[in-house]
Length: 199
Image (cartoon, rainbow, N blue to C red; front, side, top):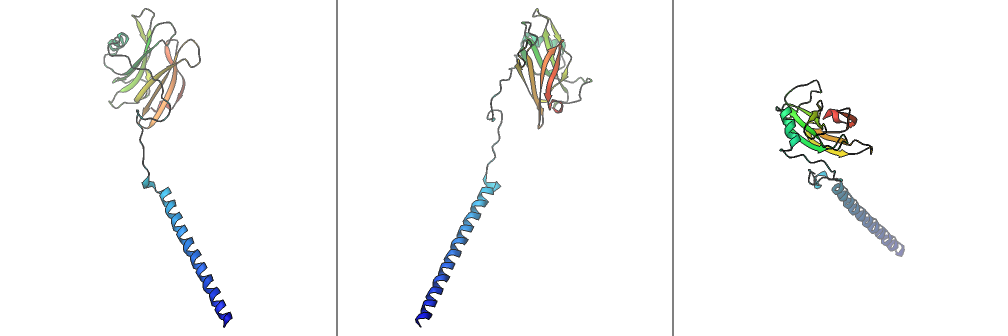
């Protein structure tokens, strides 16, 4: 009889231990599944949109547009009366001590360049007004295609040589591109570009 009691005591004890382990294991599994779902739940996060004011990364120093009454810009408007100026930035690009003017504009006139159009139905082009040296007379370069939207210009002496290069940046919808230009023989020459032809 004593043996039967010991057997039943050991059996109940073992069943109790096994049941306890199963309950603990089930509880841990439920807890871990809940945590996994919380970590992978897409709806619990938030999306942060960055505009120009709160952008991530380092700030780039872009050239400021000249005022509407700038004398070189006025000469440009006299030479091209049917265009809408989008951006005009001034710098000595030819290293002659005289400021030149890079102008990005929208023109209704079609040319033999790429057929990119802007939101206003025209063609966005870039021309440089090169000072002849007297501060009165300017030579306008042949127009080249420019980005449709968000045009920005940055002046840099990239190769540390005489002339200063300018970086043209812009976009068309989600496509972003840039090009590095230098004035060579009186014309802006593209030294390097990435994605600019799609803008």
